[in-house]
Every structure is written in C-alpha cells, then in structure tokens.
Image (cartoon, rainbow, N blue to C red; front, top):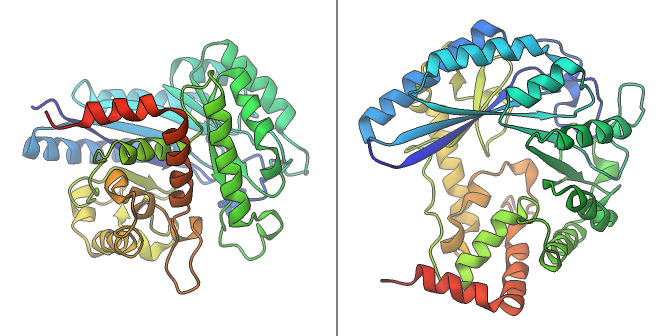
Length: 385
C-alpha cells in the first residue's frame, strides 16, 4: 500500500428529534420525529463502508480514513449507551485495518454526568452550535437555550475536550461579529460562521435574512479581526479555506485539482432512513438520493444513474461559475461543486453565484499588503526545483 491516505466524511443523521426549535433550522418540520437509527442498521452501514473501502484500496493501493460526524436533530437525545454500543461495533467491524474518527455536532443543552463522560472518552471532537448573539436557539417553549449552553461549553473546555463551535449569521447577530469573534478568541476556540440560507420552508427564515453586501462586509470584518490578533491560529471557517486559496493565488501556486467524485466520494450524508446524498445536491429530496446504505451496496450506488446525475450537476456548476474566475487554479472549484443551491444566491437567470469569490479577493489584498513575507515564503515553497 502506498503512503497516500484519503478521507471520507460520513454525516450520520442518527435522528431528527430535538429538544430545541431553532427558528432557522433546515430540519424544522421533523424536529418532533422520534425515529432513530438502530444499532443493527448502523452495523449494516459500517459493513457496507468496510466492503467499499477495502475494494477501492485493493484497486489503487491508497489508505483510507473514515470520519464519522454524528448529527441530528440533536444527537445527544440518544442515550449514552447507544453510542457506546455502536462505537464498539464500529471498532469490531473496522478493526485496525481502516482508520476512523468520530465527532458529534450538538446543541450542548444536555450534559449530565453520563453524557459528559461519553463526550470526554468516546469522541475525537465535539462541535457545539452557539450563536453568541441573536436569541434564535430556543426550546419548544420559546426560551433561550444559551445560558445553559455557555455553562456546559465552559465545563467541556475546562475538561480539555476538543471543542469547535458553529454560529449562524442572521439579521439578529450580523451586526455583532466583533462580539462573536471575541467570545471565541477569549476561549481559544476554533469556530465556523454559517451565513443563513433558505431552508425551503415558505416564510421560515424571511425575518432573519441578511443582504449579500452585509454578509460580505461581516466576513471581511472577521478577517480583519483575525489578522489583527495573535490568539487564534486559524480564522473562522470557511474563511480558513479562503485564506488558503488566497495564499496559493498570491504565490502563483496551484491549489487542489477539481475533485471528480466518480474517482472518490469525499463526503456522504446518510439520512435517518438510510437514504444517501452527495454534498451539493438537494439533501432530503428522494429524487436526488443515490441509494440506501441499509440495503444497497455502495459500489452499486456509485454506479447508478442518480449518482451520475449528481456528478454532472457539480461539473456544470463549476463550468458556469469557475472557469473564468481568477482564483480557479488556486481553488479547484470546490466552493461551487460542493455547495447546494439553497446555500447560494443566484444572478436572476438561474446561475448560482460564488459568495466566496469577493471575500477571497479581499483576503488576497490584505495578505499582499500586510504580510508580504508570508507571500514570498509561499512563492519559495511552491517554486519549481
């Protein structure tokens, strides 16, 4: 086997059931649904992944790491013993042959001793959803969940649990990005900002929408705050990716090639019923499901007509948006290939717009003017021998 190790992320929608009713949640209509994956179904998923990985590794000689991201709803609505059992199954099925990691995305409102121990010793990292400002993460009675989450977050950080956070940018907090940044900077926590996108439910997010110009201004401000500081090694995602693209661009160094998902599928979303979706196509729409991991072989899914339609749709997004972009060689088109329509604005004629492009241009100018030594170093590292 060669030394190349690729990764596949598996986003596991273990259940949609949730104790909160965040007003922008794209799973909102299903948050009361108690249906959940069973231990036996998850074991079936592990075996399907094992079969797929071993077949591909035998063909090309590369190693593979499977990165499981446990998602919901609220995944910690499932009891701690559920995860201990399924993670034991996972270790047994994959053994030492296939490397795995497990992270969980939680609203962190539930942190009893059993779940605290679970997060400490069973997961490689914990993602916490917290907006800091805005008051939209509420329970079924409409009460703000943040005070409890703050206490639980500080408890996990004090215990040394690897934690990252995610904040949704809405009309309620877009004016307060300085406060959001300082909150995470004080705790030395990496975080992601997620600009609000349309959930598809009529009127659900209308009151919280942010104009594109204001969104771009907020992202630029976050870059300024990061460049001016020396605490956080990386800017908030996805700006960390944008910085990498800008640095490659300034160094005139090629970035990643366009990733043809026919060669390797880097991410798969598994819905509660086992239906699978590629990233960038309409999650939850049965017409775009490539198959069911509880009943279908992954090789058959990837050879099927829906998967081919997904691959072609991604290529068309790149062709329409990226080929003329000055940052394409540094980016590889992933910003468009792997982004669903509802997460992007369009030009009024059906063509999606890359909101990353103007932010990358801004970052490039800041790097060019503020850290010329870094740019020079990149040029040196990537120059032909």
